[in-house]
Length: 292
Image 1: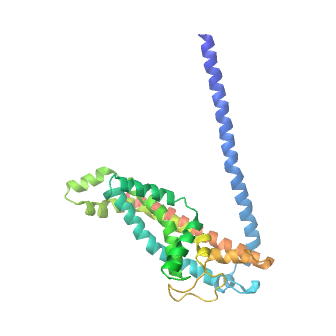
Image 2: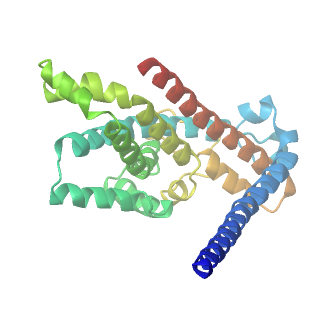
Image 3: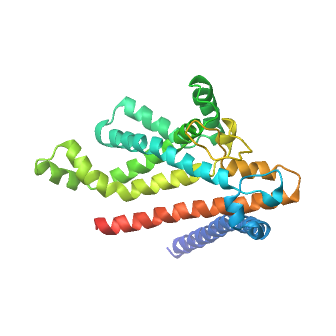
């Protein structure tokens, strides 16, 4: 009996050592990328912080690094995000409502769900190639803001649908049944109960997907966004550029001055993405408090 107890204690001791070793390995795996990221951010801020000023934000790109700015890329990115939201948000929420509330457990809905999950992990360059073939060439939209927004919409849709479905699924079924008991039909229940209750999660998914889209370079370059634009777009069919494309253009030049401009552009892009993520957190917190 004592021998059996000693064996159990030995196994417990070995398990604890393995657990501690596993925790240490995981901590190292998390720490190393964070340290590298912090070092890269510090290096970027050191290089680009001195270039950040009002002239840099309000000037057009130039062949002379000292006078170059990011006005047209910044405006282009802003218009792209507005158009992307206009296309992706209604379709994404509508698809989530249909799959969660109307489709049921059928083979078709299961097939759609699997494909949506797979699309969420597709590299962004694939969406760029799809946008090039479908919007730029087949639909003959050219290298326009509309083609860029539609391409980014395709990339943002899977994340919006998945986040919206999770938010809708989190609404207690008892609330739906209570609405039915009071005489509300299915659409009225969705409109008055389900969507308002799930709005914090839906908004979070939308903003995070747009924050990812605004930093993408590959799909925008693939569809043919310009690398030098010294004007502001006057319609959705205008040629355009965006912050990631302008940063890519500057970083590919051999002159050190353009690399400094690229670092400053990266800082601006990071600030925009952080603001969008902060907005998602604030909206989620306030809407959750209002619902409670």
